Amino acid sequence: MLTTTAKIERSTDLEAFIETLKANRAFFDFGNEVVISRSPGRLDVMGGIADYSGSKVLEMPIAEAAFAGIQKIDEPFVRIRSLGSDTTRTHEFQMPLGDLISNGECIEYAAAREYFRREPSDSWAAYIAGAFVVLMREKGLGFRGGLSILLDSKVPEGKGVSSSAAIEVVSMTAIAAAFDLEIDARELAILCQKVENLVVGAPCGIMDQMTSAAGEAGRFLSMVCQPAEVGESVAIPDGIEFWGIDSGIRHSVSGGDYGSVRTGAFMGYRMIAEAAGLAVRQVADGVVEINDPEWHGYLANITPTEFERRFATKLPRAMTGKEFLTKFHGITDTVTRVLPEKTYSVFCPTKHPVYENSRVQEFAKLLTSAEPDLEKLGELMYASHDSYSSCGLGTEGTDLLVELVRESPNLFGAKITGGGSGGTVAVLGRKGADPEVKWVADEYEEQTGHQPHIFAGSSTGAAGFGHVKFSFGSNT
Image (cartoon, rainbow, N blue to C red; front, side, top):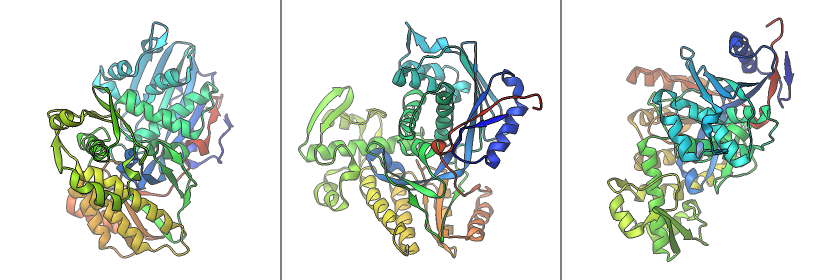
């Protein structure tokens, strides 16, 4: 039996998940209801890694989504069964809730991070069970008894479409609903980002979780990441369509390249603050605070003209962590650290968000014009892709996909997405240009041997879906 509090009608993928629940009913207690939530992945069309520097971003929730079914149990355990995007794999994890409690209070984030890293084969559980840590620490939620959690995600992993955010958002949404905790979409995304930053230990920005939580089908989530100001969503104009093509090169937001580029951007901001004469105070080893009335702590608030006129010549192409810490003492980012033994690219990672924010602003204006100029939209995407590459986040595979798009009729733009270093390329074309997209994918397979997944279509975020309650009956 299904009781719906969802804000949309029952969908095909919801029906499929209900069948999955029935197939796994031995995992649940027969008599208690199961709370179901749904969260999609996202296609990063513009903004990408500039999110942590305060840029505007335009993100589209994709059709592929994660489902969670959560049931309260009397025993103080968290039991997780994850079916994964690859249906040949099933992961099981069980944890006493008491492991997260010390002296009557929830353990610190650093302790939680170490807890989930004890067994590398269980580290995936942090994306799900990390919600308990965050809800206890940030919302004061107490748990009497435990939960059984069945997770079934169709968001492919390692393809740069935010499979991790979909899992975080779907898990926290269902847990909150099971305990009658009301959390709006914006707060939900911020709490889920804490799961990834502080429990998982991956230095992601906020755009992934916000799109998964607050996205609308067929529209771009428009957000200024300072830190998470969601604006009015932007409709995808008639006659225009966006796809994602998977390069087959595994992407990870916790990968060293992404983290190094992020650190380099914050190193550049610290140097700009020095050049601008802003007051700086060291607050911890490797961490500083900057009194910044000009740009309010965000590189994206510097215009390209101002960057070139005042600061471009003052930034090194690269610098060792040791040299930087000796002279500048630290960065404002609390998620990454400058390592003395490492050499960081500084100029390009600093320049990227300055120009990317300008590109996104222009892209959004073009989308809302009476007759959007596809050529101009495409050139902005190509420029964004080139800027990623200058930061060291490009790959041969994603470059090849972009070049194939350039050769295709009715396709006008393409760029690497998310954290870069592989993953998916976003593609802009005329509506109905699916044959050209398929040609790109087929040609890519011919040249590389990898058959790409094509992401097409869009769906609502977790807040738009709401949740449903399912009870096992005699006919299940």
